[in-house]
Length: 445
Image 1 (cartoon, rainbow, N blue to C red):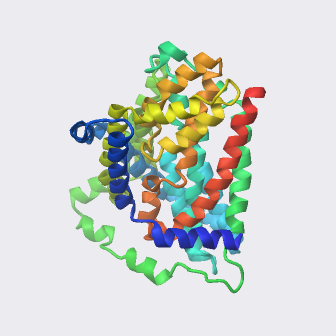
Image 2 (spheres, rainbow, N blue to C red; image 1 turned 120 degrees about the vertical axis):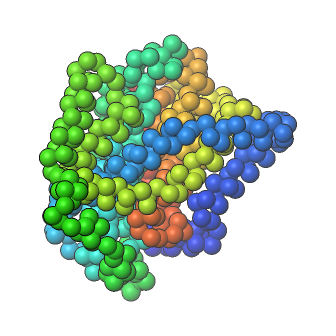
């Protein structure tokens, strides 16, 4: 295991650029492929890119909000105390790696934005407490849990196709969650990943005598320096101070938000990304107790999403090129043409893995690949639920090596992409085996 890990770590160190540079190179590659493979005129390729660049601003904002709100929840005092309690029982590097991975897995299973952040927070806590923990590995381990989002409550595609009136309702119908994320094969897959992934990550920890990079407590203390809340708020005797620190205000507005959520679902409303953001926003208001405590945590959370705000328009442009040129159809058809009813889920998984490099968003990815997978499932007589989940799992599988979603982990840890990607590549291999086995076995059950 040490040799395998060392190989991929050194490979990433030498050849992997910064995530933003990766996005630029991917943009140029997509342009070349659209021109050379699909015979799309160069001027139209550039037009596709430019027109699509700002096409997903609303979705970019939704993603930014869910990540910041996820950070606020993960940093809330009650959650922080719970994480500290868990940390107190961890004493060895191997235990630390396992716990960080499990926290990342469970958090992402519950909500992808929450999971991206809470895993990194837990990893830093453990790296500070447990002597001898290899810091790049524990951050990478916490991030690998993100793949569990594709199996969990916030998995974009199964949640979307279970909603009345979704874009593809006419060709595929409404697919209940009991046939996707709550089906027996997917629940078993979730359990297998939850057990196998922490054990693999722990096995990658440097052995005695090998180089270990530890987190320096002095560096963390320096990062945390800043104006105290009391200094920022001013005189405690003023009305402004009392309003800024009013628990009553947070309680009133927080309960109002929870009341709206309850009414929304009572009246038959759907669970979409806006409702998820609304819920976790006002839950954070309640957990942080006062308006200014909430604002302070939001300001901290904003620091983790700068890369996503910068890069997602580039990926929107890439998706526009793929759609305008027909590249996504060509990639999907390569795999569909060699499929039958039993193998379509497997080839759907693999084609989704490839496409996710260009479209690292479950919703945007499904808009591109979904129509061809739905048609293939109809033609071949394959299960629409299994086909949709193959695209979802391919998305989650590829996210382990897609630099875009690692950005919050890098912002929290102050590490570089090349420091952790070698470890996520190894985890990606294991997850690929598990997901492939699921897609091969499921059609026969």
